[in-house]
Image 1: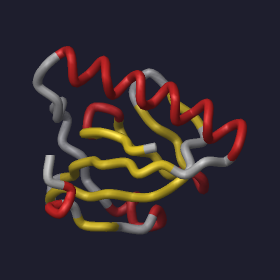
Image 2: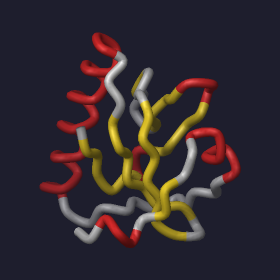
Image 3: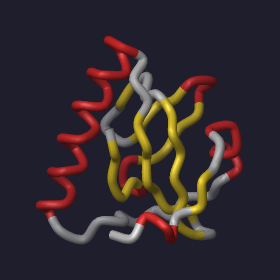
Length: 95
């Protein structure tokens, strides 16, 4: 994956993003890898306030944000200030 095609955004702009309902990842291997990365990121975020890069897509294109993950639900990633990114729109994480 070419990370140069991702627009860098600040966490504070994410509430202005509109997310499609569909799943961004097509195969189960990628979905399982994403879940593994999310589990690892939440552990690091809670223990050490470790920042991760979240690569995601909204209706305007691909974006990346460097932030700490504060929580994960079945369908969303929770960041500071009640910012939410739907898991179905996350392409990958870099820790």
